[in-house]
Length: 197
Image (tube, rainbow, N blue to C red; front, side):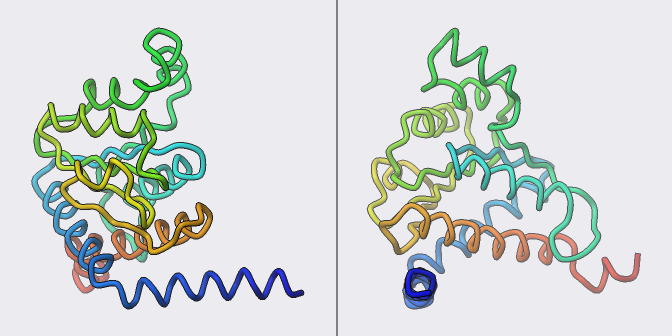
């Protein structure tokens, strides 16, 4: 039982660190403003990440397109991690570092938001996606760990989970994303109006 209790304690400690981290909380608030603003203008959210962060990108996109807390109109979000034909064609022809950047170049438009996820902040394909987003006029939200990596300096908003362990960083990313989805949903579709439909 000790390893289970120890992991739960480490998880609790990271949540407590996040509660005391004004920059972390401010980054969530700024992310809500960027995402809600883009969606309200008719723009979309693109999401990218590798491995567990790819799963998080898909999870967040699903919460926006589907629903989070209650029924409302769908919101435009695309996880760039899901099209196996595009991923393998781009990887084969241009290299794995380009798998997200090429999709951003194809699908991104000025006013959209890229939510780029890298626990280290150093993933080459995520960094190239950010560069592509900059060229296209997208705002960029970066989700990373406490070190921040190269990503920290090149995003409009950077959310640094207060942890150095990849699993704990990922836990805080999805927690922050759930807060983001909830607040965006409430901002764009106030619960009272949604309930009356």
